Image (cartoon, rainbow, N blue to C red; front, side, top):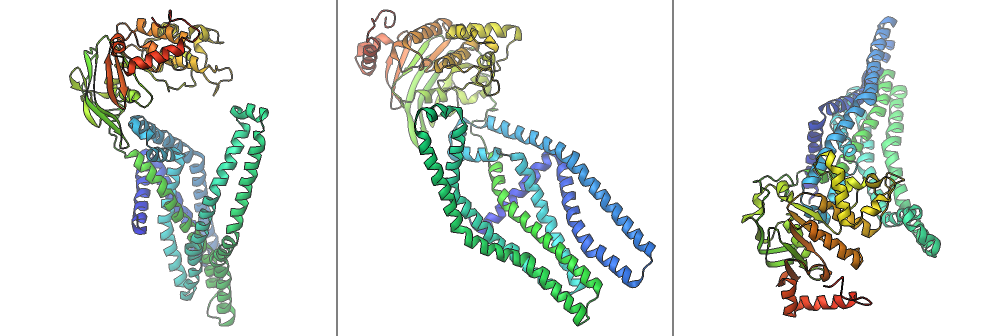
Length: 608
């Protein structure tokens, strides 16, 4: 992108920020603009009007009372301005910024809830999403504040130049010094700081990592049982040395240009203008003391106005990148929005059909010309090696993604025609990579399911019993009301991987819907617990359409139909007995697993 296009984009992003903030809190925008205006007005008034009036009045012999009236009015006005600023800082800003925080994060959370799953798996999009979320309200308010700083800074700078020009035409030339200092040397200093921080980043990340590791409990045992501390110490020392080396690399250049910045921004204009004014006043006697006082006062004001203006310009460019992330995220057009509307699929499900379905993720083909059907009340198993496409089928079935080619039909109609939320409400799911929330066991099972409160406990207990974790939960201090994880509760429970997995399975038992989907529900369980779990699943879901994925083929032999997938295609399908009689891939996998399971065991009780 060219520099001109970049500037135009930055300008658009800043005005987008203004529009967005206005939509959430017009009062904050208005008061922010007034506050910035009054800040610059105060600088200009004292230097251009106040000093000139007082000195001219003294030189021309104005009545003392006349001067005091002017001073009284000035004190009153600026006292009211101070009171106004106190009101802003004490009431308006806290209230308005809390309102912005609430409304902005509602927008962001609603958007993050509405975008398709693929967005969270897209590194570029996810990076922008996380950057947009980080201190978004503060960044937004700061961006608009800096935009007003630029706008009123331009006006104030023009006024300052005009006033100085009226007093003494040549004095305006001294303004070139802070302009050069701020717009040339300060930018160089900022670029040097940027490069230095960029070079330091790897070393600082290493330092932050070691600092974090040293106090996290997850690493405490290894720290005490091994010599890893020596390695960490060596890495820390190397990182500190790296930071020092980077600092040395940039010190001379940074110091030199910072010196030029200070000299041009402050010293040359202050000292130069004072020498010039003193010569005009004392030597050539072509300037009055009043003019000298006004010029020196204007010099200070103009310098700080320029500094404030350039700081605002720099901040606008810097915040423009954040606003680009925020704008990109909020204006992103979802391909499968969560609020997608359509027809009601109803509650009766006769069949779900994959018809010539192909799917590619980032140009990598995962499924190819897939055909399969799930009929009402039947039990189906998807089996195959890792990467065969089993989990992708579930994601397509739940419409986390849409097929690249082909279609998925529910009762003969493309699932894209249905209201997304109502369609997904047909499914109860238990994924192997589900997460626990820092909530009670009961809430982790129900996950906000809308059922009468009087039925909640009974539903939770039944689901926990079916998943085989009820007895364990009842040993916890508060039973089903025990908080899982210790994130916010020191008395919270941290369960084993298998126990957590059973609670995930309990979620599918608790949800009342026609189709139950289990993705590797027993991966963390031993064979006996696995056998019991699948027995419970088959009994509890006998009236449901049941679909499950499993690597362990011992658990699929009671399914009505088995699909064996390989490289994104159905390689074999049929009942367990039919597939065993084929003596193909399925039979070979089953027999090899059976040999491993039967080491020290008999077939009875596990492999019927």
